Length: 253
Image (cartoon, rainbow, N blue to C red; front, side, top):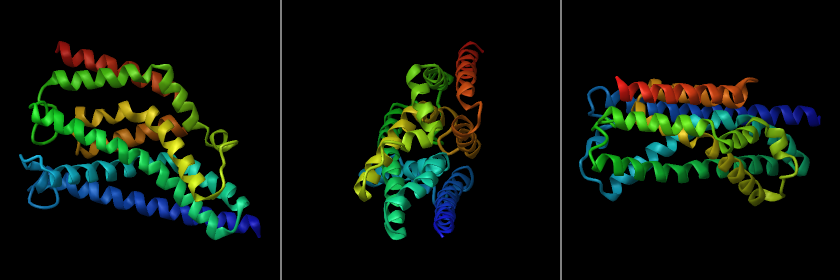
């Protein structure tokens, strides 16, 4: 009976993750399609030259939804493993609340990151370094962002955070805390490790176009490769070298 309940809860959580991720990607796709099309629909506000509070709030919402769509799939192993741990601590209803609290804490970290991304976009745009299409206005900016991301891929901090993200069971062991507040704190901790692993890769959105669907999809896939596949940690070294080489090519061509 316990095994059946765990399987049912894991299936329910998996469906919720798919639904939330799918909704995020639908919104991203609608914005990107309109931005590179008629620009008369959901992306029309992006072309505003007025950086008022409403514009910044909408921009933050765009980044927050984008980060949720990109990063929730990578967090799914930790969330699914937490189902069993939460179920062992109490009734099924309480377990569901704790798992959702863990996801909420994780997304909170990326929502805070989205504040920084919004301010960075405002800074770059107001100084003419980003085009109205949210793409680099010069190859120098793109090369600089590629170099920063590539160099960070080679640092010990990147690989320490990546190892934590690649070992969800080891991460959860010894960190469990009772109640939904403990689950939120656990989600925030996991989010901080994930942020430490991926923040530099997210800068590549500015290098390739913030709303470019191929760039968003490629980064999402690369994050999954690093975190889920057996050779993921070695792939971070390879990508770091490739990013640095690409930055040099952009500067020299």
